[in-house]
Each structure stands twice: as structure tokens, then as C-alpha cells.
Length: 491
Ligand SMILES: Cc1cc2nc3c(=O)[nH]c(=O)nc-3n(C[C@H](O)[C@H](O)[C@H](O)COP(=O)(O)OP(=O)(O)OC[C@H]3O[C@@H](n4cnc5c(N)ncnc54)[C@H](O)[C@@H]3O)c2cc1C
Image 1 (tube, protein in one colour):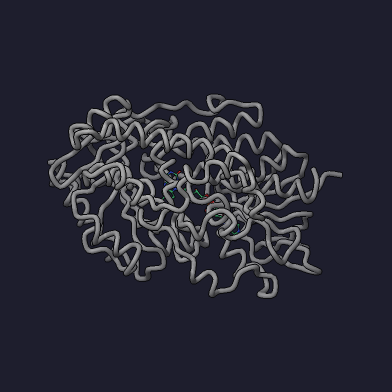
Image 2 (cartoon, helix red, strand yellow; image 1 turned 180 degrees about the vertical axis):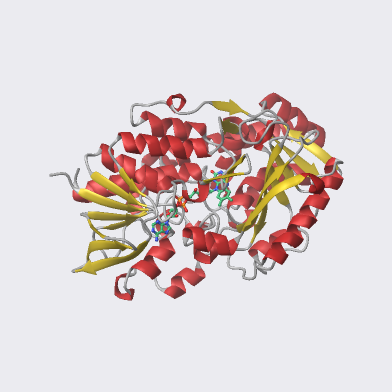
């Protein structure tokens, strides 16, 4: 008889874990509280517009290709990809700058900002390529259960080249003097995790992903990835039950005996928690079976949360790119508000995705689809309608002024999403958007463990455990935990 697994949650990590376990011969059921798969990457269809609710940057295409290949498929079996060129635009205080997708052009751009920077970029990317290779091919696949996993010759030999003990800030500053170049290279770690001074320089592998790997767009949006992974899981025999809100995991003799939803009870040989780790621990398990205390969770450094706006315009905008970063105000005060003082920001940097520039299926003809994101500290309270309207007005006014056109008067659809929505939609800890920050003390074995320390057959997957936040890491997280299950419970 096949062994049975229950996966809680159908985000990328849950979809991935379910598929790898089904491939290994398990009978897998996914219980999802929402009406559709995808978790933070769900889709919102309203008033003729199709919005991706979360991720919008398709980076590391090799990770997605590898994922599908493991099931005898190729990415193109499910969706096609377009490389965006330019990759994105940054609006600086003194005007816009397009970041070319072509490396030679990027070198020219850097050289114009800082003489000698083209050569420096070559050297910087050489190191970043090494980190990407070792990081993405080796480190991210370690389940983080023991330090001995890292007794790997390539890792030991290259430990200094991996720059685990240098900060991203020191690393970038060693190569470049110009503030703009520094900010271009620091933004990927900043938006997804922690301050560059608190992020290991190992993460310059993200610059390799950005500059060499490229920024891509999957046909019909990021939800195409969810759709593809869901279809593949169903093909592999995984059963999905939506609107099944898990309320408890019953443990006897250190074994998870059953999972209770609002409608039913489920039994399985193994349970994999793909919902937010903190929620599963603190809300579904009795205190005696939680691996981590409330004090432990309180000490975790969270990646930012965000205020999001899904906006439909009844016209096309002039001269706008798919991805725009508004770095038109000083960065330091906003960074301090996100990471240090944890306040609502006074004058935030923000990001706008306009997928209708690339894809005419996501908005009615002649209209524009906007996704606006303001990074803010996790754990803030008071995300009222009035506060959201205040920030919307603030950033749209800036966007109008900077891009030289009316936007507010063209808004025909608008929905916001902030901390309290992250909590109610995904049971997110402190309303976090991207899980735990990528600090040294929250890396690998120092992350919440992918196997419960108290319940033998309970495992965890997703952005709060190994390897960390982001779509590619979440796919890998599912694979890593499925391998751990097979290692301990067989196929
Ligand atoms: C706004 C935003 C922008 C982002 N941008 C990018 C980007 O551009 N590129 C990138 O690579 N990454 C990006 N990320 C990060 C990336 O989206 C996440 O790291 C990833 O989607 C997390 O997947 P997950 O499976 O760990 O969690 P989730 O997607 O949160 O999945 C968890 C699932 O568990 C379900 N669940 C919760 N509680 C229960 C319960 N009690 N019972 C049953 N089910 C339950 C939830 O409904 C959800 O479906 C972004 C994230 C956000 C929020």
C-alpha cells in the first residue's frame, strides 16, 4: 500500500513538496485554506484585469527549468518566457536610468557613471558566478539538519570565495565608489531581506541572477508558474482540496496522528506544513510539541512586509517599462524605518510592475495593469483604509510628476493589500511578505528546521525554512523536504 502524506498549503513550496513525494510513490493530499493554489502568488481577476498578487520578477530561469526537467518535462510544456529588455528602470532623483539586459551595454553604463567600473563589474560578476554555481547547485539543497552536510570539499575549499562572513555592503563598496552603482547592486537583497550591512556577501549571487540570468516574464503572468506546477502535480496523482482550513494537528507519542480542518479529519503517515512555519507551530500544535518558543520567534529578523495596490487604468501610460523602481527620494530614512525603527515610512521608495506593457491579456484593450509595492517593516499595526489611501495618493502623485502624466484620474479599479491581509489570507507571522531576512544568523542550519524537533513525522517547507524566501528557493524547499521524508520514511 502507498504511504500517505498530507501537505498543508498550496504555495510554491507545498506544490513542489507534493509533486516530489508523488513522484516518489506517495499518495499525497494537499489541504489549502484558500479557493485556489499559489498562496502569496495567487491571481486576482477583477473588472477585466488579471493581477499577479505577489511575485512579479522571474529570476533564475535555470531553477524553474531544473524543476520541470525532474518530472520529464520542460518549462515550455507549460508556458513561454520573454526576456525583458531593458531589464528594468530606476527613477533616480536626477532622472530615469534603464538597466540594459545586455552585459556589454551595462558595462558601458557603469563605466559612464564611474571610470573603471566596467572592469570592476567583470571581476564582481566572476565572483558572483562562482557563488551562484555553488549556492544554487549545492548550498540550497542542504536540508540544514546538521553542520556535517557542509563538509563538502567544494564548499570548504571555496568558503572564503563564498563570502559568508563579509557583508554585502562591504563587498559592493570594495568594488565600486559611485552611489548609484552601489544601490543598483544592493537593491536585490534589500527588497527581499535585510540591510546590505546585515546580509552575507554570498548573496551577490543575486546580482549574477539579475545581470547574467536576466529578468523574464512568463506568458500570461507569474500565475502561469502556479498553474503549471498545479497541473503537473495533478498529473502525478496529487489530490487538491481547496477551502480546507487546517485547524489542528493531533499528536500522540510524538507522532502526528491526524490533521483536522473545518470540515473533516485526515490521517497520514507524514504531514508537511507548507503554511507559515510560525502559524503551524503556534496555532496547530499543542505547546508541548512546538520546536520553538514564542521568545525564539520574537527574536527572528523578519524580511519586510509591504503595502500593495492592484490598479486598473482606463488608458495606456506613456513611456513606462514593465518594472520600475522609484528611488527618487533618499534611501537611508526609509531603510531605517523598515529595518531599525520599524515605523510607517514618511517618504518611501516604491516599485511598480506594469505587466500590460509586455502582455495584452492582463488588461482590457487600451488599458494598463499596475501593481505597486511599498516595502514596510513586518509587524506594524494600523493598516487602515485611510492609511493605505494616504500612501497611494503619495506615491501616485510622485509617479505622475516623475513620468509627466495623469494617472489618478484614469484609475477604474483599485484594491489594496497589507499586513492584516497577509495574516487573514495566509496566516502570515507579523504580516510578513517574504518570510525571514537573509541574515547570517538565519542561514542554513540556523533557520527554523525543516523537520520538527518534537514530532517525528512532521516536516516543514516554504519561505520560513531552508533555503529561504523567493519563488526559486520555495521550489527548492519543497524538493529538499520531500527528499528528507523519503530518507526517513522511504518511498
Ligand atoms: C508581494 C510579494 C512580492 C514578491 N515578489 C517576488 C518576486 O518578484 N520574485 C520572487 O522570486 N519572489 C517574490 N516574492 C516571494 C515569493 O512569492 C514567496 O517567497 C513564495 O511565494 C512563498 O511560497 P510559500 O509556498 O513558502 O508560501 P505561501 O505562498 O504563503 O503558501 C502557503 C500556503 O499555505 C496556505 N495556508 C495557510 N494557512 C493554512 C491553513 N490553516 N490551512 C490550509 N492552508 C493554509 C496559504 O493559503 C498558502 O496558500 C514575493 C512575495 C510577495 C508577498
